[in-house]
Each structure stands twice: as structure tokens, then as C-alpha cells.
Length: 291
Ligand code: PPS
Image 1: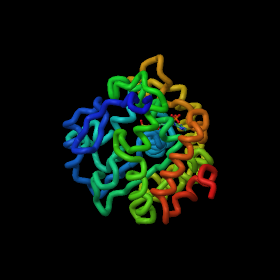
Image 2 (image 1 turned 90 degrees about the vertical axis):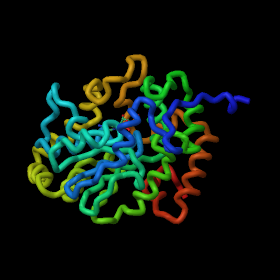
Image 3 (image 1 turned 60 degrees about the vertical axis):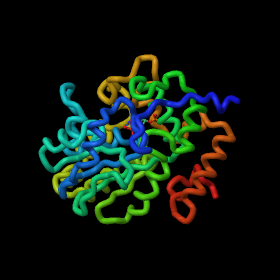
Image 4 (image 1 turned 60 degrees about the horizontal axis):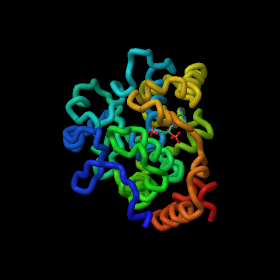
């Protein structure tokens, strides 16, 4: 049977939690011990839900909308916790902005720290995640895997950083906490300006300066646009081989329709309904989940 021969990406399995093989295990273990600081801002996402875009928006907000210079690296300012471990993060000046894909129970917590969570609908997420998993050959050994192969892993939650719903649901539950800002990729795409204002009001301090000036808001919007970020692919991912789709790939809402079979659409919709029953999550993506 075809399903018996499905290709699977390679992962490190840390007591049942899957991580990309390209991430050093020491980084992961040390990341779990990072003590969140009261001034920390965590950018938390399930993979492929708008992390890099939001990371760059935060950077631009800190720098009056001016883009990174060619010698600067986004990850030096907003590092990825479980990729580099706590020691590197601890060397950074406070206040820190830290990226993580950890699920809520593994994310370092401090009641005074702030958490920006970005969610994306699971349909576009799985397509993006598929291309990511194919493209980072040294992380997953899945260059010749098909979308159908990856879909089976995703729907079973057998991918790095775990099941999509195990990630989304606990953060959604805490979306109204004072130190949590819950955003969606789709709302960012629809209109970024109110999101920038939301972020500034949530983070306060110097972030508020940028929303007092229309010109700066416009620069943030232009420099973080899909068009601008597409021009600079090497900056977001220097490890992607040339024969694979670039890191900033489509950057659209709804392009999953080109990949899903009807059966896959029904299966993921069914899983969504089961896992989100009794929550208001369906209202986040009304076009996909018509009741
Ligand atoms: S990662 O590897 O988990 O950090 O990936 P992440 O950055 O979360 O997600 C990558 C997807 O975000 C899209 N992207 C953007 N969309 C809109 N506007 C901008 N500026 C932008 N920058 C990145 C990127 O194209 C990936 O989505 P897909 O659907 O694959 O195109």
C-alpha cells in the first residue's frame, strides 16, 4: 500500500518532542532552562505562521522603520531560543526580543514578560511547512518528499515542534491575558497598520514612538512588505538551495487550494473542528471554516 511507503522527514526525538536534526541538541536542552526576564518579549509561533515577518516588523519598530543594513543579521537581534540556546541569549542586552517555536508549556515564562503569538490557518501553514521541510535539506533529509507524504505527518502531529493544535490552543486560551498579544497572519495581511499600532500599544516604551509618526509607520509597512522581503531572500535564509522555493515563498492567504485534495481538505477540516470544539477559533478563519 502507498501509505506504508510514505517518506518521512528526519527529526531528533527528545522524549517524544520532535526537533529539526539541523538544530544542535545542546541548544534545545539549554533553551529549556532559560529563565525568562521581566523585560523579555517573546515572539512565539508555530513554524511557518509569520515568524520572520513579525520579527522584522519588531526590528523596524525598534529602528524608526529603517531596514537592516547588509552587514546586520536579524537573528543577532531577535535570536531563536531553541536554535542557539540560553547562553547566547543571556549575553544580549536587556530588554530582549526572543523568537521561539516552543509550545506554551515549554516556553520560558515570567508574569511580567510579554508574549506575542502569531497564528496562521493550518491549511496555508502545512503547505508552507512542507516547502520548508523539503528545502532545508540538512535539517530534515526530505528533499524528495511529496506534499501528500508531509500532510500525513502534519495531520498526525508528527512534525517538528509537535502538533499544530497542541501549539495553538493553549495560547488561544490565554489570548486575553494582559501579557499576551494574539495576532493572526491573515489579519496582518489584510491590514498591517492597525497591527503595528496594536503591537506598539502592547509593548509600550520606545515602541510607542514609531506610531506617533506617520512617516515611520509607512516605512515599517513598506520595508516589511512581501515585495521588499522577497527581494532579500538571502537575508532570511542563506541555507536554502537554489533549486528549492525561496524562504519568502508565496506569502499569501489561500494558496493551499493548489495542494490539497478534497479528501485532505475534509480531513484537516474535521481535525480542526474536533480540536477546536467549544472555542471561538473558527471565527478566526471564517472563509475557510464555513459553518
Ligand atoms: S519559520 O521558518 O517558521 O520562521 O517561517 P515563518 O517566518 O514563520 O513563515 C514563513 C512564511 O511567511 C511568509 N512571509 C511573508 N508573508 C507575507 N508578508 C511578508 N513580508 C512575509 N515574509 C515571510 C513566507 O512567504 C512563508 O509563507 P509561504 O506560505 O511559504 O509563502
